[in-house]
Image (cartoon, rainbow over all chains, first blue to last red; front, side, top):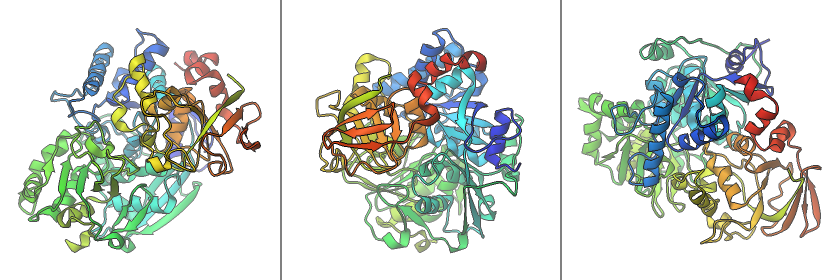
Length: 431
Length: 189
């Protein structure tokens, strides 16, 4: 029987030859990810249900990456980091990346990739909805709550319904004004915020495979914005090179069978696509940048798991080089590694960091920061009636802080071009 | 588990995401310390723009200023309730505030799992939109045995979708209770 890549990974993790969409199966989990917001309550439930002296099923498979509320004076946030530290020590977790030490990494989804935890064919669950980011490595990654995570901590297993798959094929050569963010915002406008609920979103086509791995992560990252269980791109030579440079752990590459059944199939030619934004207050409220060009903004924000990776900053630097920003522009690298790359990577003879500083941007320390608002002292948090153009992934009311603010989700090219003019601006005006 | 849940309805629109259910800035509070837990009741649904809060008129907060619980126990909403983040704090906050069930046209997957597996609130689905006909403040009764919702104020009964497979987890009170009853934790561990 023909299967999709997601079915094949489910079948492997459930020790079966074949699984049917709609069937519920118990999956053996390869990695459980958690962070400072959901880790402490997860550990509480684990102890309550399995006993105060219980040990996690496999310490090497638990990855704890604090990233949400790091650079804040909020005492409750500090307490939550202490709770992570305590649990990691008690349980002897080798993969705890403590705040304030040289082990601190930053945004969990990007750090997972950097640290070699993303392996084709494996199953990852995380207490964060954007765990689907890791699907860019031809693996299954999905978000869960604290109770489900506590169940995994004790048993190494979780039940999950085998999803139907939707296929999104992007043909053509990527134009220089288009990014992965434009592709996923295009899809969101077409299928809406519940268009993929309980389903897998599979991305394919020459344009997708021409993207570097961090752009592929942007595509998969926002599968959850359509309600998707996971986003997935089968591994290729680019994926393998990235993985092998970081780990010697084994992996298995799966591909969808040519005659696999899909819930639906969408085809796009990237050469006919335009830069787009998601207007307030929903990620599916799509418009071409040209149709809303001139809308005044008060802030530009380039950061997060979906928009704060090296490629995002390379693209932004291309636009910002030699220019001045007209509005507050926050550059928030996702991880410590990305932050260091801002200094080592160059564009046109200058480091990215220098380009951003010269343009008048403010560069923050790596964390989730204002993508989800955060405590009141969070850098970049929206206030009052701010109008923000942002490379993040969500713009529901209040997402970046103020309930009265409006957020336009956009590519790093669009966010950079708009920062220069102080108005929503099509990046082609600067390319 | 009670078979009838009766109380006042609180009506919302579509795509109520987890940041509206419990804004991210409040996620710092403990979910086990009894004093801190109260804060989740205080801020439940505080992210809903006020004109969308308590439909059809709006302007009705789920929890009044200065209170830690809500007079409303059944939430009526449109499609895609609970979209957005994975925070289990969302169904937890609704429970702390006093909500016992939600009747929505559909749910986001993680929120739905969290409601059921954590045993917080019971997520029923309705095939027909109810958030246009039920008014905030109407007295409603959810009949779990017959999968119906009766609006006692308007004297109308609506058929809901059966809970399906998850009814066993709902009846057990959560995934751990269900797993223990069915020897899943021993055999699966």
